Length: 212
Image 1 (cartoon, rainbow, N blue to C red):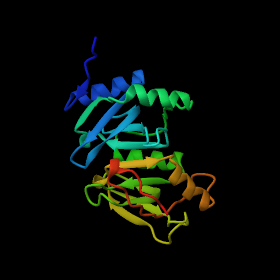
Image 2 (image 1 turned 120 degrees about the vertical axis):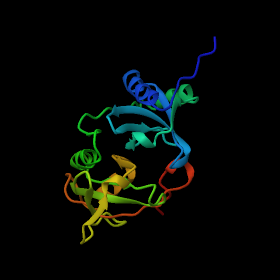
Image 3 (image 1 turned 135 degrees about the vertical axis):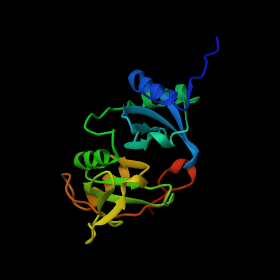
């Protein structure tokens, strides 16, 4: 018997994201007002304004977390590649890991909690500039603005802090190999201050382009 594909839009998407978090299935998330491509993900946290996911990368592994703004998600469905992706991840002995210390109800709570838990975060303002994000550590944040201490391309803290409108944040990444490499290069062993790095993103699925 063929299985019906579960999809969610509007009010249904929150229920489907919550269900996927609870049962561990792989979803396909669309954000068509921001990106024409999709993400296949495990949902590891759901708040009133943000959802925390572990994307299955193109190389079919799990690498870090992405917090996505709920209002930008235009469609949620079961991933048509879930069986294949799940099988490969099982062979690689990889499974999603939930984190409870990330606040997902407000943008300022998200930025501050992510910066407390990880050395560096990558903050995306995709509707302002879809090809650039700022990497660093959030020093202050409220509903109107956040203050970022950025790192350069070698993980070294910049001299100046930068302030941005909180309403522009559409995605926050942390815990992946690129941010960890910058933190290591900069000599960070504990979450402290951070600074600025702009990284280009490729067209495909909003992934980070080669850093070479």
